[in-house]
Image 1 (cartoon, rainbow, N blue to C red):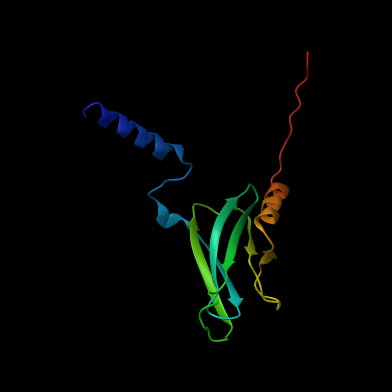
Image 2: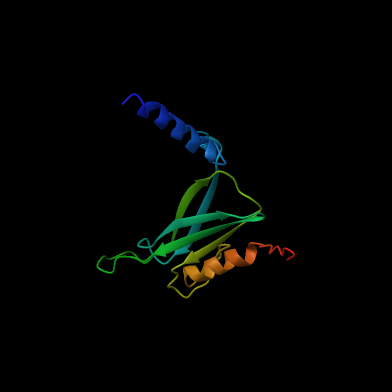
Length: 136
């Protein structure tokens, strides 16, 4: 047991210093909030991922459809979800999956059909440099 304690402390120190942001300073983290209007309170929204690129921040959120076995009042409602991130770079672009109604939302969101579209946006915004090395 004695020999394991220093090793455990060592790995905990490596895990703490390997992150690019302090784990304990969450009070300085920035909030990202996604809110949108939905047809009734049965819908909900959840932020699935946040990708911080070199010049912008991309957010993927999904709308959860209501339970068809329950009855909901037909009143337009605002639903939201909030997450904290260590930093925000540039503009925030929010992409939402799962919209099933036909009216246009006023929020600054982009509605997409599936995750593949979101991943294509990440590839588009990520500038990859291909280095070519001379051959002998």
